[in-house]
Amino acid sequence: MAEDNKEIAVIMFHYSVIVKGIERKLTEMGYRATVIKDDLEQEVDRLAGRVSLMLFYLSPDCTDDMSVIRSLRNMSQMLAAKQQKMILIGEIKYKDDLMSNIGELKRYPWLDRPIDMDAFEKMVTIEITKADDMAKPARILIVDDDPAYAKIVREWIKDRYKVDIVTAGMQAILFLLKLPEGEKIDMILLDYEMPVVDGPQVLQMLRQESSLDAIPVIFLTGNGTREAVSRVMELKPDGYILKSTQKEELLKFLKEKLKK
Image (cartoon, rainbow, N blue to C red):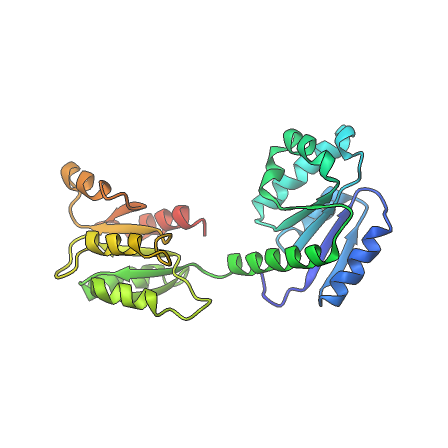
């Protein structure tokens, strides 16, 4: 999704003057509001993945109308398939019934009616930021004392991911601690066997540092025997890759792990 996309779609099942207030607020925030009130499924399918955010303004009786339930279920599947961000706006007393009927909606944030416009502005800003983050390529740090191998991996994946390389364990820790505010590493490909500070020691240091302990770590290992793999996985990394793994298999592995 382009970072300059300023369009937000407002989907309403029945007309409400409250939507006018939502439009005004979005305009004040610098967004262009597109209100959809007819041919909802067709319009949602057309716009999903193209707008910064979708707002579903739910009528109080939506849980009693099975046609609305079916339509919401269909649209939520469209949104998930296209990774479209969405906020549900409705009366809190109907939320549990709606979620029990359409489990797919549980992944989306909910804003209570009547709308607190300050809370509305904050939630929209948070969701737009998430959408922008999803549009950015994941960033991978390769830690390997063999620079030739690290460069091969970088060449394989650089068209899909942003890649950094360091060639020693302590270099990896210092690199991560010195990242500018607002930057992050989404995954570390960590050589299991390195001189001085090896992969297991790096993993232990990462897990002891609160600002780094959530980064997924995948071990790189040249030994694919059952005993060696078992020894690697005892350390509870987020996975492992054999160094003999070829390009397409590696890209498939990373796509599954990073969901990008």
